[in-house]
Length: 310
Ligand SMILES: NC(=O)c1ccc[n+]([C@@H]2O[C@H](COP(=O)([O-])OP(=O)(O)OC[C@H]3O[C@@H](n4cnc5c(N)ncnc54)[C@H](OP(=O)(O)O)[C@@H]3O)[C@@H](O)[C@H]2O)c1
Image (cartoon, rainbow, N blue to C red; front, top):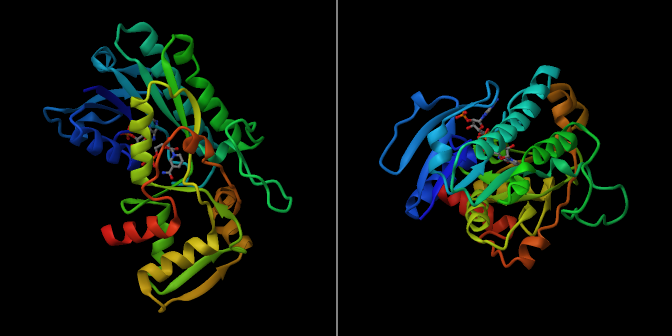
């Protein structure tokens, strides 16, 4: 059994990871900026860290055998003002640097660090007929998210230099009944509208939350895994297919498809609209070659399960 330190363990993915790790018998220490808000139990402890202030609970690092690093200011939570963009980037880069500094300075038994990154690394699909899906070897795109992901991943590089195993999961859009992107798709459907964004042709590279949780644990436990893996299901879909599959799952035939023009989204969301208008097709072939089996490989399987659970 491992003692797993999780940064961002209070978030959407981190909470699900914590639950699964506890059920499997591991001990979990969640690093959070607000430990006072949470209740500690025998196998689950909340310890303080603050990437902005550069402080971290020493005992958490001393006791850990693995670190799962997920913390970062929400990319889609607020309009992208210059201040918010700085927070999105700095929370990740300073968090990564703090973990590396602590692992180097505090005696510990950490064998592996699994760190979040995002498919924002890749930018939009090239404008050619049938573009090839992005592989892990593709360079970072030259925009805010691409350069943020690059700086975020680079902040973790000292882990490898210390001779420890580092796995980075470049994560797609996470579909979860607890919140995130799916909750936003469901909101208009409650009123009977299936809102297709812009042309609806933009590709979405997604992953079911439970597959992502299994992937973090698989990466932690598989000693041959090292480096970057795309954390996306094998079947990306376009926005139209995702929205209409969800609409049928939730409402049968009683919904009205509505196209929301891209220009309106730009007005309402500002620069962040890029994220819902952009087409990004990402390959999961490296996971397949590494023998990772998806429980939810298709959008139909994922949405049926998510709607049944909620
Ligand atoms: N959900 C997705 O679709 C998706 C897709 C691709 C990549 N990812 C990445 O996966 C990671 C986890 O995602 P999630 O959806 O679980 O995120 P989340 O629900 O927003 O949780 C993120 C956690 O990060 C911490 N945090 C927030 N702002 C922070 C700041 N300014 N400084 C330091 N820590 C901060 C919070 O912990 P405390 O408040 O307890 O400190 C929070 O629980 C993120 O890095 C995200 O970018 C997510």
